[in-house]
Length: 180
Image 1: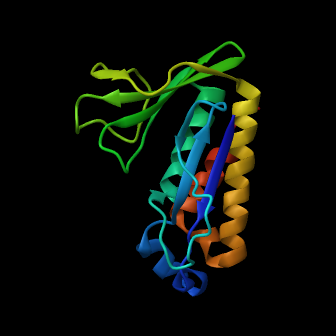
Image 2: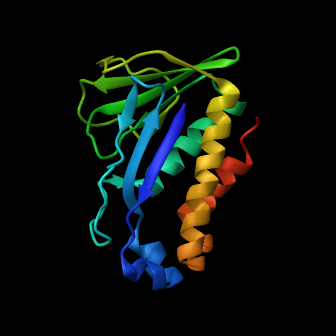
């Protein structure tokens, strides 16, 4: 299992104040969750991308959700679903059983009214492109923590003001509370 990401920063974010970062919202880029060679969600472009071209994914939301899901799986629940906020009906389902998690892409037939993270199965969904891909729990948790920390380090290297942005603080709290 692997998480890939690519931040697409514009020059203004590198010099933005804390207020500008807090009110400006999120960090864009590309996000990819790879369960194995045949099953992945999202994409990372392999061609050089112009510096001013924004990515399609809200990386800040992806890392907030995947770190919260990992924290939940490590501590309180054996089931969590993450909504792809760029899609109105795509979800990533993570189910823990013993020392493995099973990751599935699912599609909701209901277009609205769910939430970003759910702790129970959707009643109105169908299987997506792939289902129940097994990953060892520790591999999943270590990958989430490692890539989330790398993402945070990259943000802070570009602008130290990110350290005090509320969504960054939430992500850091999530990864600090993951039990591996």
